[in-house]
Amino acid sequence: MLNPGNKLETISRALTLRTLLILVPLLLLLAAACSSDSEDPIISSEQEAGGPAYSGTIITTDMAVGMNRMLFGVTDRDGMPIIGDSADVGVYFLVPREDTRELAKEVTANFISWPTVIGGVFGAEVDIPLGGVYELDIRYTSSDGVEVFAQTSFLVKDESETPSVGSPAPASVTHTLADAEDISHITSSPEPDPELYQLSIDEALTRDKPLVIVFATPAFCVSATCGPQVGELTKVKAIVGDRANFIHVEVFEDPHLIENHRPTGELVPAVKEWGLPTEPWVFIVDKDGLVSAKFEQFTTAGEIEAKLLEIL
Image (cartoon, rainbow, N blue to C red; front, side):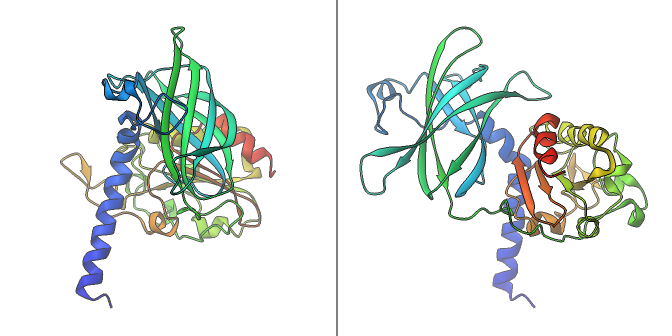
């Protein structure tokens, strides 16, 4: 039994996660991280005069040692996103207790259009060997022909909060149509695909097939990408067919119960079991039950299909 102190801590963590699930995608996209336009992580004269012309913002919240799908946006001083086809990115490790940094990786980040708004984010896969604080140097030509330079920093943890690539997928018990009075009781999707609610995660892990899972709340996602994200899963299902199983997990219990335009239900247990700090998330699990790929925030059907085909 929980003592009062532990109970308060549990409630606090649940409320914090619930807030993050709803607000973080939007806040991360719009916030401008403090940065410098010089080669060194030092405050420049431009910052002193009102800040850099452009600022980068890391969208990915769960960065850990190993391969990461890193997403970031770039905004101007007015907070408006600056679009481009691709960006050259230098990933620098900030040496602890020293006023210096070391180049860790150089990658090309491609622009990913968001499905419901004009704009999007840049994305790249980055293999990071060491935990610590890193800084990005971002260079590209905007769609308006302007040369853009932006910086931002981020923390890389030693271990991921969510299941790491290569680790066993948690055998969570999730809602299915078989145990629901109505499909609206297990998904907030306005046009749900019934085939995404046939299996619980724990059941799918015994079927000797790859599994693709999307955690999202279509009706309550502030970034407005969760509904489209579930739709991307249906697109992949139509291509791959029964060679893999597909599941949508609504992050709120009883999403049909709403008060003041907000869900009244708690988070489903799978959110905690998978360590989700935000949503939407997509995970690909191989037939042996090991996580083979994972994606934080909106991911196109093409990206999901490409990773899934690697294990089919």
